[in-house]
Amino acid sequence: MTRAGCPSCATAQTALEAILADYGLTLQVHDVDQLAGDGDPQPRAEYGDRVPVILLDGAEHGYWEVDEDRLRADLHARR
Image (cartoon, rainbow, N blue to C red; front, side, top):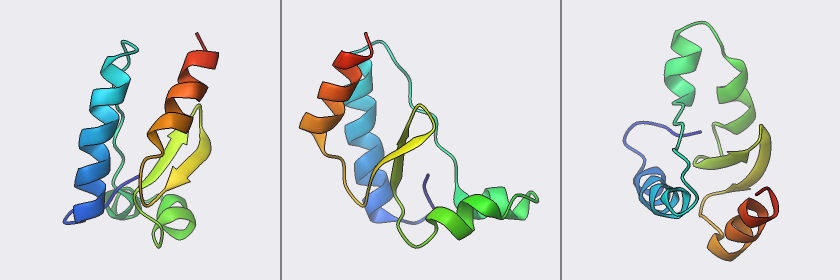
């Protein structure tokens, strides 16, 4: 979950893209404000004050920054 103009979101996106590439995965980015504008206010209400929020298999994995070691361990466990 992200928001346009969020420097932390851009940093997290770059880190996530590099990590996920090692596992053959691609990042899905969802802007909480865009979703709200499209009629789905729930993500902004849930995550808007903590973006970037990293979801893994639909569950919150972290927010504000990427915990690379933990994420890699969890991705490795899902192989």
